[in-house]
Length: 355
Image (tube, rainbow, N blue to C red; front, side, top):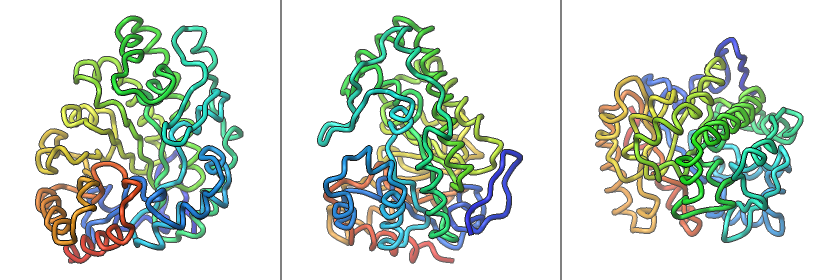
């Protein structure tokens, strides 16, 4: 049974009573739910096998391949949620931005966005631009049954950074130069990206995603005052655009310890926390009324089993009094992680938190 959602609000679905969705709603759970960012990907040998010889962006546009890759960690690790396999630049590619994902580099944009004329190239996204998303999610929800599927998109700031820099950046100098030097163009760019992002999330929700996560990978490069002034309005616009569907909305960024309260203000139901801030302190910064997600350091998985379990205990203890907690890593699974370590971690969290 696939999830059924509508803009008028949530409807009963096969996934509604799952531990993951209960935690998102801050309801009692039978155990702390677990999923991992980048759980579908390079750490799995079965993933490398099916992706062999297929460029990243092409793999995101093959519904049957997307379905297989998304299901792999659910089968192997018994996680409590699947995350749709895609990339944050897929909607940009779909509207005609000339970009590619280069191995070892990441997304590279051929003609960076630096002027108002460049902004005009970013047209609206329609469901017809991404038919493979609708098809893949239909296949996935049929296979997943009671396991929720998380849809996702890149947040306006992070998408803007890729577009303005032309690719990944350590210092975001072109991005910040535009943000400080031409605040009106910057605001218009983020507003346009918010519309594109919201449209992409709507496609996923209407196809059957049970929750959505907004990734703001680079926003930790900003000071709180800059975030409030130059980013918060666009992120809020995305969350507000999908609020009527009634599915949980998750917001995550890296290096965002100083921004957690503001990220909560943006409108998400769940705030993701990286490994730098303990969960109890994160809860204090975010404030009441939000579930939290996180936050084991991904590098801990390279230590021995006893060390992993000890650090996991620290996370669970810090999260013990939270209104709702979803166990995750503080960022994505690292490519050389032992898959068996992830499987053991899921089992350990389930066992330690079972009622």
